[in-house]
Image (cartoon, rainbow, N blue to C red; front, side):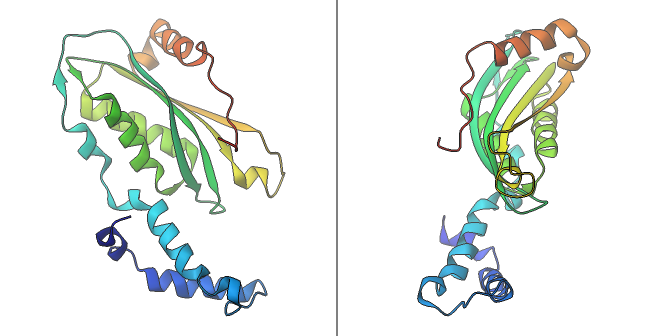
Length: 202
């Protein structure tokens, strides 16, 4: 992470706060193994939450005029995010499809949008809808479909403790919402091509 981006985050404040957390749980923040931990945590949060300081629309400003009217699909875009309820990570894959209306976007830009949107404290449902709305509005697409599959550590290592459970969310816009055949084609492309099983080991 660049020094400029680090400067945009109040690292000392995070360090002080995390030091207090260590004390509150009964640890000694001055023992050898923990002396640098508040600093490490501050830099980690700065990195994980870069999306709070970036407008994902910047990746959708450059497009190409193309007379293509079939589904464009990018599958298995990996991401890591942070659940805002327990501040534990969730991670998985995003599948994005859109039906162009005279505009197509570089495929890597879709992955960049996912990266920016995922780097914020949030819930999976909002992340899914945000990505769909951005693409629908910025590309003026005929339709957009987004499916997110994720493993949530807040469910795997605490509370109910069910590792391996996968949360799937979807957001359909335009013809993906209104036309059952278009939606079915999109879902068939997403689910019918041997989608890899999500794993914490990936």
